[in-house]
Length: 240
Image (tube, rainbow, N blue to C red; front, side, top):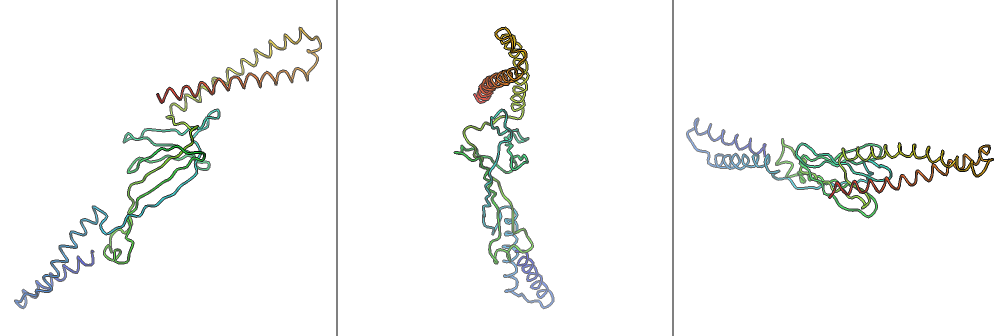
C-alpha cells in the first residue's frame, strides 16, 4: 500500500505540475492519483489498527508438564496474582519452572485423565499471499495477537498460592520434627520393655537394630498418613 500511496502522490504532483506549466488538466493522472492517495491512505490507517489485509493464523503447541512442587507426594500447581489481578500458574518443564503470562493472554484450566499438559495457542496475523505482501510492502507482515493457555491436570493435582505452598512445607517440617521425637520416645519405651522381658536383649545388637528399624517404619508411616490427611484437609479449606 505504501508503494501505491506514493504512486498516487506522484500522479497528483504530475497532474499539478502539468496544470501549472501547460495550463491543462491531466484528468486520468488526477483521478487515479486521487483515488490511490485516498484509498491507500485509509488502507494504511486500517492496517495499523485492524491487521488490514492479514489473515488469522493460529499457532499451537502442546507440552507435557510436571507439577511446580510435590510435597509429601501431593502434586501442586502454584498460583500468583499478577499486577492486572489475573492468576499466573507455575509449572515445571524438564528441570525448570515456568509461569503463564496474563498480558494479552488468558488461561483455561481443565481436568485431564492422566498426563498433565499445557496447550499454548497464539493468534497471529500474517500476509499469506504474494498480493497481500505486496500491498503491505514496507509494513509488518507478521504480528502476534492474544494467547490462550489451556492447562489440563489430573484430578489428584491441586492449585495453591505460593504462600499456601510454604504453609504445607512447614507442615512437613513440623511433622518430621515430631517423628524424630516420637521415635526416640518409642525406642526408649520398647527397649525398656524388651529388656524386662528378655535379659539377653541388652546384649543382642541384631535384635535391637531390628526393633529400632521397625519402630522407625511404624512411626513414620503413621505420621505420614496423618500428615497427608491434614494437608488435604488444609487444601480443601482453602478452596471452600
